[in-house]
Structures are given as C-alpha cells and as structure tokens.
Length: 79
Image (cartoon, rainbow, N blue to C red; front, top):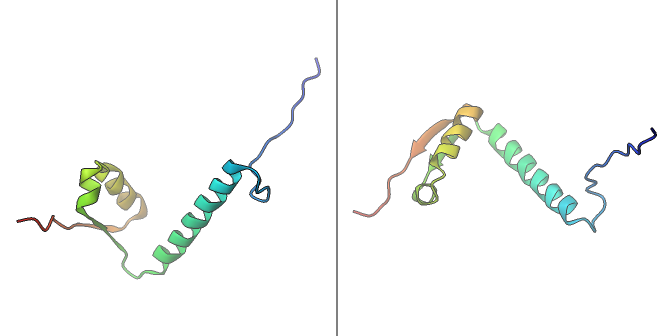
C-alpha cells in the first residue's frame, strides 16, 4: 500500500493564507512582549478591574506563576 505522506506547515511567507498571516502577527507580538518583559529588572504583573469582569483572573495568576513574576491587584476606584 502506497500512501501519500506529504508534510504540511504554516508558511508565514505565503501572504494569501489568513492563518499564516494571523500566526505571523501572533508570533511577532509574543516576541515583542518577551523582549520587553525580559529587559525588566523586577517585572510585576498588575491586575485591573477589567480582568475580574472578564473572569480571566485565574489565567492571569497562572501566567504570573509560570513567568515567576510578582503579582499585584489594584482595587476598583469606585467607593
């Protein structure tokens, strides 16, 4: 039995591909963010009210733990 075993990959050089374009943009954003955060002497992630509204606090805490960054929470300014 002879089956076709082509390998497929996302090629960021093919601009016609929406997936390739989105992947390239995401990879560039990750690279820029990583470079920015790695320059910091004592990086701290700060949680704001919008994360609580979106219910993304657990993901934010996991990110801080995975990166080894300190975490701070700023309460809402509403009295």
